[in-house]
Image (tube, rainbow, N blue to C red):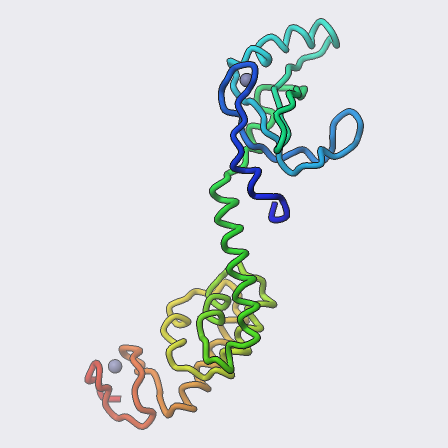
Length: 216
Ligand SMILES: [Zn+2]
Ligand SMILES: [Zn+2]
């Protein structure tokens, strides 16, 4: 889906037969009939069960081909050329309707990941923690990209990364461990430790926590 032109998802196609909005559906992998692809990831299909083309189609296919089926109106993205698709039941394509908002969100997340990866190249010299944290805390980002970010985290040696990492649940246990080791290195480099009672950062040699007043 990421390669398809997102602009097409916003297209409004009105069924020429019933005048209702057509649904944006994932295209089946092959063009049933001639074995060719549709040349598009998505198709706009009228899923209205009251659509005249669909209602009359059952009888037509029964008479013409002697089996059960009907037609749905279909248009390709970027085109208003009217097509019909044969369907075996009223449920065909109802499971392939694309959640356009979800696709847009996935795409936005993916773009953000790519931007953060590009920013990693200069994040250490410019002391920019943001792209590093974006990647480390994004459970949908690729593990390879997150590991690159972890390597930069170590070099940046910035205490302000600690809270967000401690508050994050990593699905990948190797990342939990790597980040844990880096945090203890950063704490050591700054002569700090985390209070075992309230988790605030305190001096490494403190005997009493200045935040929760607990004796250590
Ligand atoms: Zn229709
Ligand atoms: Zn404390």
